[in-house]
Amino acid sequence: MSLRSLFCFAVSRQLWGAALMAALAWGFLPTAWAADRPLKLVAAGISSSDETAELPCGKVYLLLAKEALRRADIDFVCEALPWRRAQAMVQLGRQDAMVTLATEERAKYSVASTETLYRLQLRGFTSASHPRRAELALLETIDQLRPWQLLSYLGDGWARAHLENAGFQVAWSRDLATVLKQLAAQRGDLCISAEVEAMPLIHAMGIEDQVIMLPEVLDTLEFKIQISKLSPHLSKLPVIDAAIRSMHADGTIERISREAALQAGVR
Image (cartoon, rainbow, N blue to C red; front, top):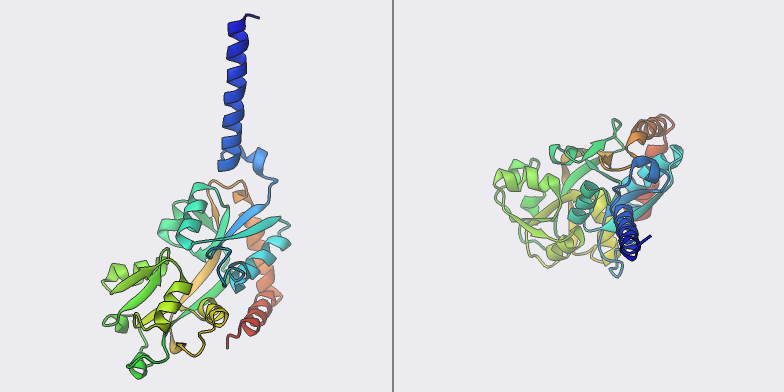
């Protein structure tokens, strides 16, 4: 073999190795090559240095998702990322799955479980010292939120669809923890969130006396496990659906929800 041939062979091997590493990193290898790796479940969260960093993968619907994956005999890992980035990672196939509301936008890049994993009730949260707190406590419908300054966080698809796109005044922050801190400082009238989402953060940040939950349920969302269309685990959705059905049938979903609520200090 000539020196030129040897050089070309060496270069081609280096290029193939680089391409292989890139494919591994981005999840572009054929399904058969990657199906045995753990499913990567992503949760909405923030940096590991934040006081609330341990909470995201312990949220009640993540606990339920983990139980469903265990019953389906699927190995998994859970990672917390800012919510907008988390969804982008599922879209790119860098993360396999998330637990959230099925929407038309998310259906473009992921497939939702047929079975509902958890029903999330949305309520208003406001400052305990808001000068018009009594008026806020009377809010019963989404349309009644229109005169108020609302706070939300990047990646909150419900707020984008039901509030901003409907012409409501919405100020955006990076995550729910930041929104709750802003409410405590009276830098907005209220945010719309779930009790199981907001209350653990409120307790973790020690602002129980500064931020309160309003009484009325404004909407109920059906959360499902959604797997990226690029994920090697996509074909396992029927097994996951069967696991969720069994959890409903034997009372596991109700039990885990109740235990998580008590631990988080939720009513």
